[in-house]
Amino acid sequence: MGKVTKIPRPTIERLALYSRPLEAFQESGTPIISSEKIADLCGVNPAQVRKDLAYFGEFGVRGVGYDVKDLLREIKRILATDRTWRLCIVGMGNLGSALALNENFRKRGYHFVAAFDSDPAKAGMKHPCGLKIEPIGKIRDLVKTLKIEIGVITTPPGKAQRVADLLMDAGIRAILNFAPIQIRAPECCVVENVDFTLKLENLVYHLHKSS
Amino acid sequence: MGKVTKIPRPTIERLALYSRPLEAFQESGTPIISSEKIADLCGVNPAQVRKDLAYFGEFGVRGVGYDVKDLLREIKRILATDRTWRLCIVGMGNLGSALALNENFRKRGYHFVAAFDSDPAKAGMKHPCGLKIEPIGKIRDLVKTLKIEIGVITTPPGKAQRVADLLMDAGIRAILNFAPIQIRAPECCVVENVDFTLKLENLVYHLHKSS
DNA sequence: ATTTTTATGTGCAAAAATTCACAAAACCCA
DNA sequence: TGGGTTTTGTGAATTTTTGCACATAAAAAT
Ligand SMILES: NC(=O)c1ccc[n+]([C@@H]2O[C@H](COP(=O)([O-])OP(=O)(O)OC[C@H]3O[C@@H](n4cnc5c(N)ncnc54)[C@H](O)[C@@H]3O)[C@@H](O)[C@H]2O)c1
Ligand SMILES: NC(=O)c1ccc[n+]([C@@H]2O[C@H](COP(=O)([O-])OP(=O)(O)OC[C@H]3O[C@@H](n4cnc5c(N)ncnc54)[C@H](O)[C@@H]3O)[C@@H](O)[C@H]2O)c1
Image (spheres, rainbow over the protein chains, first blue to last red):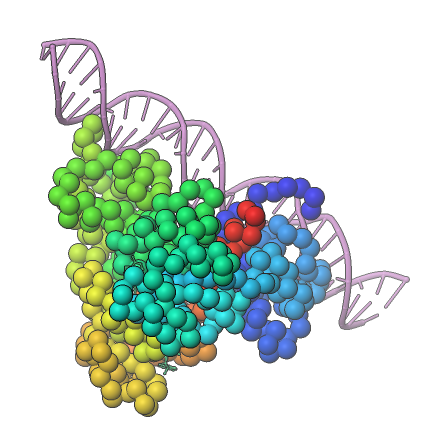
């Protein structure tokens, strides 16, 4: 390469997508995979796969394909998922609980190391996931001492911005927000929103249109 | 308008996004809103808001703005969220439960009318949300009799495709999938995927890059 | 050793999406 | 009534993203 090209945002999202079938192939012992196969399994164009990868180097062998293990390692290195990350959950209701109990996150290197809730009835209690639920007054303190890098917000929407502010004050620079509001954050903090109803509305539009 | 323009996919996603602040404004009684205000609250460009709306008609008044109530009604009509939809959940584990218990869905017109699980220990039991958990053998039957239109998949990833096939066999043409795999479906069935770890990987890339 | 096959990497064109910039329309106020 | 102000609606320019098409390289076959 050599050239300093700006990486398209969709490329990053797709790299994460590609890693899913790669992991499956690695587990099943398949040594080599083609861009066409990856593309097929992820529902994208094969040239797209090659171009996405080409932004970061030459990982394939012409006439052969990609070494599954190597490629997966490279993608993980690119995405920085070749290490573990420390997260906290704020709002231990139904959704927060489901996240905390899901083993998949830990398997992928996402370690929940603290849980917060403003409800006095919950704070102090031990959650089935093993974490003690802390009052939100402790956010600042625990983010520092536990070196928490990512905050997950699963509070009611009305509280989400305040929680985000608390997290950012404490030094958090990455937030995964499940509340259906747009979190306001300065440039330096990355925010990703997950909004199920938005997805449903999309679904319903296309369903309605095609009928 | 008059012209038959193809609607960009992102436009539909944003319309759903715009409806959030509009609902808030409607509740607080604000009568008029500008494209700039909407844009600001949703983190997009004001021209984008106007253009998105212009695909469907002229809803604003020049020099004034948009009537909050009218615009919200129009957006709901466009997205087909001005009616109720009947859904089922397949896989009543932690996530499925959290979804079933969330009141927000019903408020927005998404009615969960059936819940399925393959676990014999769960099937037959009454879930706290009020639904009886049914064995998956009943999918075909209940989709028909309960007129279910949308299927939500919250099973482990290894089972998700099979469940999707069952749902589609039963006549379902819209699926919201939470399992981290790419569901294969014919053209006639709309599938939306929600993958939290994909979002986390995105977050982590940007966090890592900017540090 | 040469040809055929296969699948990558990439320049370039096409398509899609976004943003600018301004005319058009409505309102306000004197 | 008319000039000033505001904010929409939209054509055109710009930017971003995608996908074709083929040169390139490696391996397999002959
Ligand atoms: N559960 C779902 O399926 C689902 C789906 C889509 C979106 N969401 C969104 O996720 C969020 C959580 O949903 P839920 O179903 O888990 O709700 P929930 O009511 O079960 O849980 C919310 C939790 O947040 C806590 N909380 C409230 N204010 C807080 C604060 N200031 N600081 C810390 N904790 C606080 C509450 O005590 C409660 O435990 C909501 O914004 C909801 O809209 C949930
Ligand atoms: N819980 C989370 O926070 C979370 C986050 C991201 C993704 N997901 C994904 O969502 C899915 C569910 O997660 P979960 O945490 O609720 O898991 P879970 O194990 O708590 O629940 C899965 C449920 O599916 C049922 N099931 C298994 N096979 C089935 C089948 N063939 N038909 C019907 N039901 C079946 C199980 O009996 C169980 O009740 C998984 O694919 C997971 O990867 C969950």
